[in-house]
Image (tube, rainbow, N blue to C red):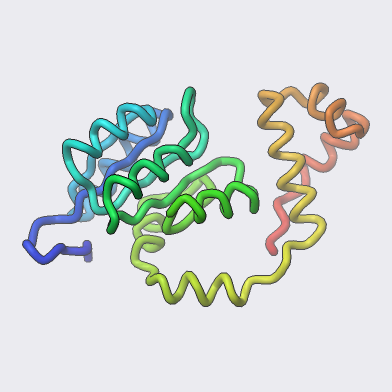
Length: 185
């Protein structure tokens, strides 16, 4: 059941992602669940659309051409004191999650995720998020290594040879590490 503001109008959710197919599908799925969805393909489009529609919620992709989604998180929180922003990324790391939270993000999710997961994240109360943070453990070495490798690989545009050079490991060793699944902790 969607959140309903005091004036009984559906909650407005802004979706900002440079992947047009994902963005349109997500906006359509959110609208099908009774929310009012608006979508934009860049940080600047998202900023302008937010000024016009005044959303209560926002879903922002971290990596976009030009400005990053983190800048939009800061801008949205400066524009609207009560907005809840969720940051989505295909390359999750602890550092960017901390940065997103410091800038005012309500939650941080890694792709792939669907509308149900995103809406559930909005539904989580601030107390639940705080308890989770208090109970969370220091990430394992395997988790930190996995995040670092994927961050370097993303910075190299998926070029395994270049990533292995930057990481200082043999290309075949990097390929073996990439075939392993993400650590669960």
